[in-house]
Amino acid sequence: MRITTWAEYGLICALHLARRADEGPVTGRDLATRERLPADYVEQILLRLRRAGIVRSVRGARGGYALAHPAGDITVRAVIAASELETFELHCATHPVEEHRCSAASSCSIRPVWMMLQRRIDDVLDSVKLADLLDDELVVRARVGVGPQAPGQLAAARERRRTVRPVAVDRRLPVLQD
Image (tube, one colour):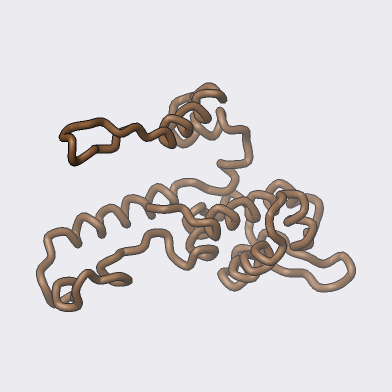
């Protein structure tokens, strides 16, 4: 699964509105400025979130956007689905390898694995509410069942993944490994 910019920005926007729920409506431009996100993206995402019933818009001089429901009632899956339009792209349906091979009428032993993965991802995303994400990272890690990690460890892990070194298995065919 790849988390796209749409999904990530959608969660950032929804969390921003959750944090400022007591302040009233927030303009898209203010949200974009405070979160350092492109204003055009934010406006499009807020429109998608509004169409999905996750946020509501208020017109007028003090208008803007606010969550349509309490943060404890909004799932991460709902925000991603509204922002991204789906939570997991099933390639069988969207990018078939071959029309006959990937049609629903043919038997494909791989398709059930992708379907199970989609269901599990959706279940996990459904289990996390916006309210669960309002605390700092260490609290959220404990809440969602991911062990604590020192702040520097995450950056080091990302750097290790970027550092790819060739390992000679055969003189003609290098294999890349982390």
